[in-house]
Amino acid sequence: MPGTAKRYYLLDGIRGFAVVNMVVFHFLYDVFMIYGRDPNWYGQPAVRFWQQTICWTFILISGFVWRWGKAGNVKRGCALNLWGFVITLVTFLATPEEAVWFGILNFIGCAILLLALCEKGIEKIPPVLGTAVSFLLFLLCRRIQYGTIGLGEHVIAEVPDFLYGIAILTPFGFPFPDFRSSDYFPVLPWIFLYLCGFFLSKILMEKSWWKRIAQYKVPVLSGLGRKAIWVYLIHQPVCMLLCGIFFS
Image (tube, rainbow, N blue to C red; front, top):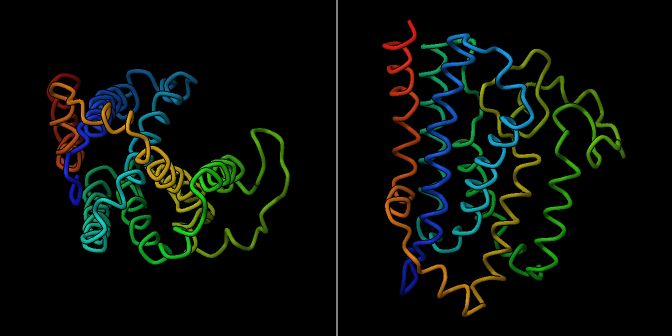
């Protein structure tokens, strides 16, 4: 990683594994949902779990490595937001009904910038406490876009309705009525999962056993993980091309 004596290839490998899963998932999504081979596919619990696992991995890893790219984080955050807007434009023009509005690239870009703004205060929080509180807040806010705060189906509080009538708050987790996005990752609750990765990094990087394990290079996957952004940008057009060839 930048700014460290050695690169922790295992993290690249974990990200690379998520990249492979992402590509396969999106190809199947195109086949079953966009090309209508099985419109019920995405609603299956196992499929939703698979999708969430991929997303959690990307967000946790991004938070985990934040401190190693501090010198270029502002530039990186802006670049990811720019690519996110490109994805929005392309998907809106190609398939308006499946357009991406504030997808995972925009979220990670914003998370990088928000953490840069709040770093001094967040660094004062003990990492174990930070990890525990961040994960609890993530769980509590999982359904905030649907108007509730709670654990699972247990509602602790309802979010004021007026917040969902202000369109500009949609990226923060309060989508306006009739909002639709095929890849929506608002600041709430996902910023808390990002912070989990940040605090976990502080915990694990103090452990010599973790540093040894993390230097392990996973064949193929570690190299793929280092190119994750480029795979993300090109994989969907390739998937759509393949679907167009085989399923049109």
